[in-house]
Amino acid sequence: IMGILSSARYMYQAGAVHVARYSFYIGKDLTGLVGAEKEAALQGNISLVSTVFQVASAVGMFGAMLLMPALFKKFNYKQLIISTSLVGAASSMVIWFLGYERFWLCIPLGAINVCLGAMIGDCLDYMEWQTGTRLTGMGSAVQSFVNKLGNALSTSFIIVMYMIVNLNVADISANVTANPLAMSATVRSGMFSLISIIPAVSLLLCTIPLFFYDLVGEKKARVTRELAEQRKEKGVVIH
Image 1 (cartoon, rainbow, N blue to C red):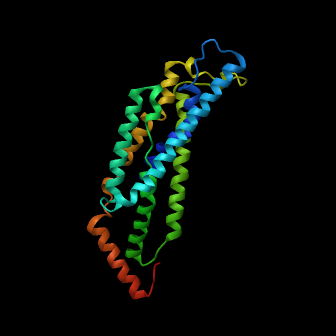
Image 2 (cartoon, rainbow, N blue to C red; image 1 turned 90 degrees about the horizontal axis):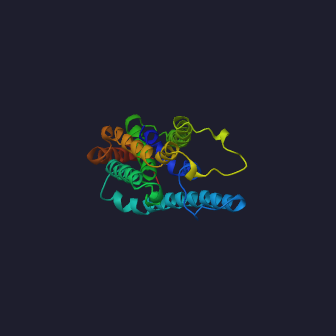
Image 3 (cartoon, rainbow, N blue to C red; image 1 turned 45 degrees about the vertical axis):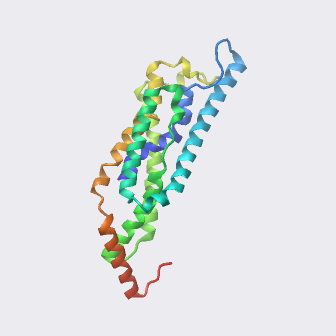
């Protein structure tokens, strides 16, 4: 549930091209530019915005992968996801208030992706402790399903936003690149919300089911300890 509720975190990647086309513009002044020169500037904007989002996402993911091992020694997965989700939601809202020109200030956190795999492993341990059977394949399938569903939902948010702001791409000439500066305030704000307000709300919602997650602390230690004893009795060795 947490993984699905946090699916809008994928908007930083899925929505990059769309906000570049209809919301953001970072490049040379378009005043006086016509024809091929203007088209090149608009295409350059799309490439630059997309690159910024890709780099930001990569920094967030690899940064989390480097930091998480050290943080795991001091905090449990529940604490880490709740805290990083709140930080992510706050930074996404800050982006909204900073405006179009400073969207690059937000670096998506990759803590959820890192912790989610570890939490699934803990849940598999719990199931094995309860039933005596380890369903590793099911764990991998669930994680894959959640990731794919999250990506699908993030794409759906984009389509819904097109409908909300009444943006009909069929009305835009296919021969030229749309100028985001020429879009209405409603369109620009709506597209901007794809990488600000919507991810913020999504990250806040994903913390709710975590308050009911209790496989931490002494309970987790007990499960780990007793599961090791069960495996020893069965002659099962885990490398």
